[in-house]
Image: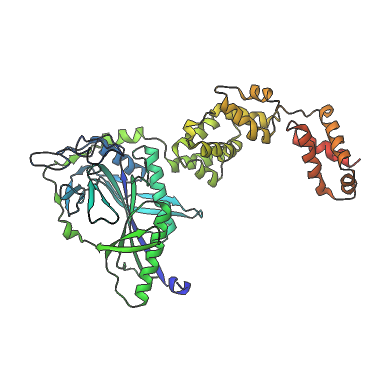
Length: 485
């Protein structure tokens, strides 16, 4: 689409992020929530709402939702009740969903995000509320039948709803990424988008720049990755602009995003609030959340990623980029803090975390919490490099791996065993320097005539002869003196 046409319009997006909570049982019943079970085994009479059964609120669901609300700067509602939201889906066993409409547990709030391009934005929240999930329908290719699995029905969900305040698909993707990070820090959800533990719906509309009235919105359902969220919003924005430019009417509808084609497709016209016929659930009494309980939960919460970013910048003098990278997961941040408790070279600690240690984590497919090398051992390796006992190259390429393979080992002892301790004495270095110069007599003459860039050639040769045991700084000094004689 022509950029001049795109620039006439403003994108407006509001997000609804559904996070499946990591409780052992469902929101209103004792059925287990274990993922990957055989179809229709985690189902009870309460989940099916059979006559004579009564639901009971899972206290952990309330606690987890309060944690999320506090993390997102929300106001926690003291008085609240559950509502019934009436609509028909084959995988909704009750024929209605028990949710919160008039009295969400968390009101307002905001989440600060940083896009991949480094741009900062504050996303304003409307609410966070609790509700139950529906089951899962499977449509077999080539078959007219739909298979229904009700294991997921009644699994607790926390829905985070933003205001229509997002004007860039990159911000939308960053917001979902930040929500995933926060729920993982709080350990209220695993945030696994591939398994459906975190799902996102986007309400997308466009309007002429300068206009204050919202355009007709379309809702894109159940996107399962940050990249697809961005792709779907970008496509939908262009589709709606194209329709407006052609004079066509945009119908408020629910759409799905096809990952293969990169396009959205209509599923059904969008229901209005009247269609849902909300009313207070008669089977669940009103709930009072006392301020004392909220304060107790607040005191027990872990440090959050945005708090740790501020701490790492202020206390460890890190750059913003390093601080954001080192708070990507709770395990990463915890490992880094333990490392900084064992060494005062915070910059080197950050470089090791974002370099050799990250490579080790990626190669092993584990997390920092499962690394075979402990923070204290890494701190000792950093000390050996700082004291010029071991070269940085030898430490990263040989020593780290060797220490990881020897559980509980002392890095300096391993370095001695592998003959990695550097020798900066003249008696060790001078013969190697002479040998390197003798190997390239023409290059030595060229150096003396002004081709100073040849120094790297001689440095490489000396380091090769020294098998990594030469102190680079001392070698560089002695090599210059020898070449300039």
